[in-house]
Length: 303
Image (tube, rainbow, N blue to C red; front, side):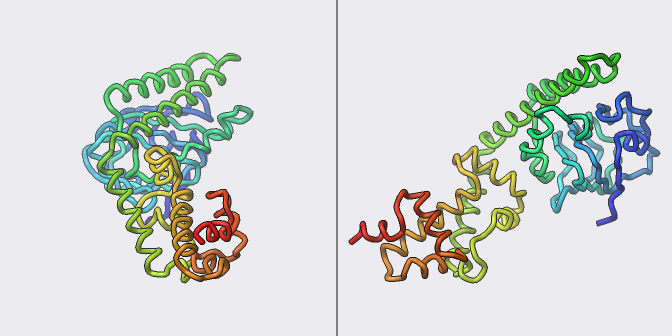
């Protein structure tokens, strides 16, 4: 990967892509049509100090790499980039893309609840192949809010300006969260396949004594094995099953623990170590929290 171009401010971003100075140095909306780059200019990799929310409708060709994943630019998508994340373009002429970009510096949200809340939106750490695909109706809703934000930025600043901009941004993110939940629900076959792969992965991990050798698998390990970001996997599972990846892993541990407690003579400490726990007390706490019984009480119930 090439060394990414560091873009520290929104004003610097405007300069990089050939736009005039932003009306507000902490928030801006622009259309890809406004980008003024030389035809041969290719923006390969960028890292910013601000949030980027982009709605891309079509492109002449090329691929985008975010994290370790590539995404084909032939389809319309919406993607989200947190500060200090790297977005890498390969063979994409930025001024051939259609759509809009909203950029917001964290300082703009200072003193507003959204400053903390925005960090809870997992999609800011999804990889590009987990982008949001909008229906025409959804796209119109997003475009309307983007338009409101753009108009407010260009209007004369008064005591209402920042409140209205933050409110519209909050509304935009809530809609995106809603549309992602819709996407999790409507992509049934894809999600069913992912759930099957997850179960098979955990089956192999438990069956081959990986718990003893490597310990309890982390959420990041499981997500990497499935070529997903950790947040996307947990958000998808939460919508599909009501549980996060961590809870899913813990459920499988409890199932295995019940099997060992009821069918072997292993001590509770031996079972704890066999399941990858460093300390038997941690196993005891998890088991009792999930079953309302201690491991010994569960074993006794079978005698």
